[in-house]
Each structure stands twice: as C-alpha cells, then as structure tokens.
Length: 161
Image 1 (cartoon, one colour):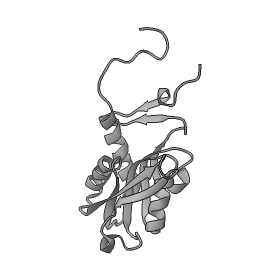
Image 2: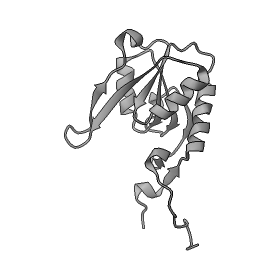
Image 3: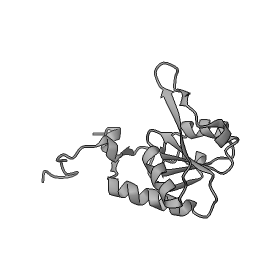
C-alpha cells in the first residue's frame, strides 16, 4: 500500500525549530542586514528568532497567498513590506520556514531582486530559489510544524506497541 503524503512526515518540535532557526542565524551572521522580512505566516517564528540572534530590530512582513483552485496556482501579495525600507532588497534578509515548490520565493525575488532569501527547511524543487537554508528534506516529505500540531498518541511505524 502506498503512503499518503502526510504519512512521510517530518515532525518539528518547538525546541527543534528554535535550534534550527538559530543555526540559520549562525549561517547568516557577519552581514550587516538592514532588516528582516518574514514571509507570513510560516516565516514569522523563524524570522523573530533570526532577528533576535543577529540583533536586528527592523522587522517587516510580506504576505503571499496562493490560489490553487480559482486561478490555477496564481499568487497574490496580500501585504507588502514598507517600500522605502525594501527598495530593491539590498541588505534585506527575507525569512520563511520552508521552501517547497519555490513559487513564493520566486515572486519575492522578482519584487526584491537583491534581497537574501533564507529558509529553515528546503525541498529539492524549491532549493534553487533559496540562498541559505539549514535542513533539506525530500520533496515528498510533509513537514509538521509545531503550530499545526497537538500532543496525542501516535501508533508506531511498525508493530502495535
């Protein structure tokens, strides 16, 4: 029997996400960033951790919504960061939790060509769109982030106990 996509899961705890976001910050240290821009919603927590670790006080957001059924996967920017801050993106660190297909980051790259795009996790299809990441997972892995989860019993992968 084939597994459903969510059955090949990578479960990320709050502790693991915090460690991985700090590791992302370590990789980004040494550049004088003007600001951090979080891609909402998933990039909010990693961006906050990166900004804290790198002592960056200017933080903004970009909100991108994808329409899979209505517009065949079109993207819409619901909220843009401050244009005076962003300019062409030079000195701006854009942070997201995950790059999957790369479509969202491709749009951000078009808007801010000189911004540095960083994610905590990356899948191979989206990997070319991100400049810095911490952990690569296979394309068919579903990442369960801590904000999507509740504690409950889980059946063992093999066996019954």
